[in-house]
Image (cartoon, rainbow, N blue to C red; front, side, top):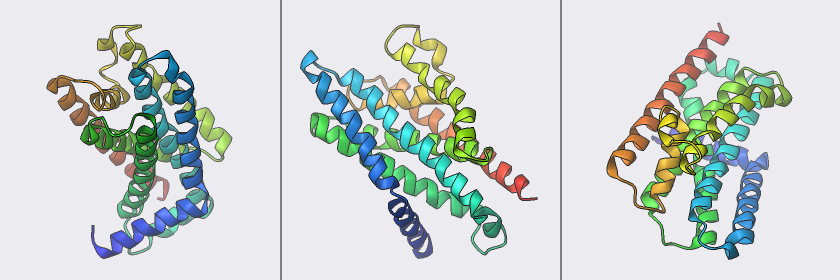
Length: 230
């Protein structure tokens, strides 16, 4: 990232702060932490922490991504970018990175407050960042397809429900083999690896499939936005 990219990234972080999305992200993380602390007397709850950590970037990524896209559409920013020296790819990449950074930091702080420093930092940070980026792109996509926030929620509710299905496999309600085709399951495996031993084929699957899904989602979104501007 060059100096111009760093400035763009800093500006996007500042916009998140001005729109109170930073505060909301930490409020959501605090709510999940409160749930964990409330249930902590029941015993070791790291399996539940996987669910809470996963949900934090889902909310921050999907909802905040949708809100940002709706705002940019209302301001005709995307149309202006199309005729500016700044490419659409760089414009969106900066926003994805800013939201990913916010989601990862809020999840990390929640995790530190919940269990301290005894977890696999590499898998936690990379897993949370990747699953955040995936849901941010989903938020952008559904936001681009919607005229207002209510329509955005209606369009994205099915996606949210499908994304939650892999937890039926994780908690052994249904054999997990049925959910390997869903990218969120790859994210769950990476977050699980932050707390428990996970065999390396599962870790390779988690990173490989999630990165591939992000790249495909990214290309689909860019094509959709470029075609919409024609």
